Length: 289
Ligand code: G3H
Ligand code: ZN
Image (cartoon, rainbow, N blue to C red; front, side, top):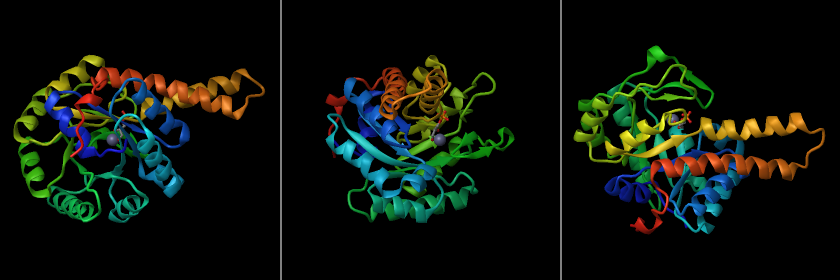
């Protein structure tokens, strides 16, 4: 059944679990995520980066919304990391339910006005699904862009309060030392900062850069109010690794065999994350607004 960011995160926030938001690029990715969620009776978010949207356009969004409509569990379709109002409009027109307004490149005042404008735009569409915003700047590699480690900006708790109040955003992505892509040194999250942010802000918190974080860190941040986890690198690596292996081992391979193998390899990752985030068997907790 089709759901929204807002409706999936509300019970997660109250009951202290995380909803997995998995970046997908094609049929295999979307199928893997939805099947994994169905097998574990878990809500889930299918999310598309602007590059995937550019490649797949309306047909890719239709694939996601159609899988979501038919799924036995609640599934939201979300646009990830978008700094362009035009692309956000396009994605909403294609049927995406919610978006991430990424103003992390902007200073505080401009990030507030950009995010507020996107919240107003999305609210003016039918069936408001919610807006996720980012405060601070996450380093690492995402959607083909690299943010160098020295450009990372941690989320400031006092600014978070003002930001949320003035933008009306529904979920806040925080930077507490989390990194997109590969962690080149052991991850170090600033739990005190997260605790302070959680004490000031009452909307669901989001952690990006989940791939590569140890299980105990995930469990700990859930305790501080993180209820959406973004996963791209690990699911993508599972897909590419399996393809690489099969193509190197076999001279001839049926394309459908490769597709099934790709789905299974990604499904394993998604199921492991769903169990870790604590959203398995949480469908009963779901009540649409
Ligand atoms: O928005 C997407 C995620 O933040 C991706 O994080 O590179 O750790 O999988 P990841
Ligand atoms: Zn991200």
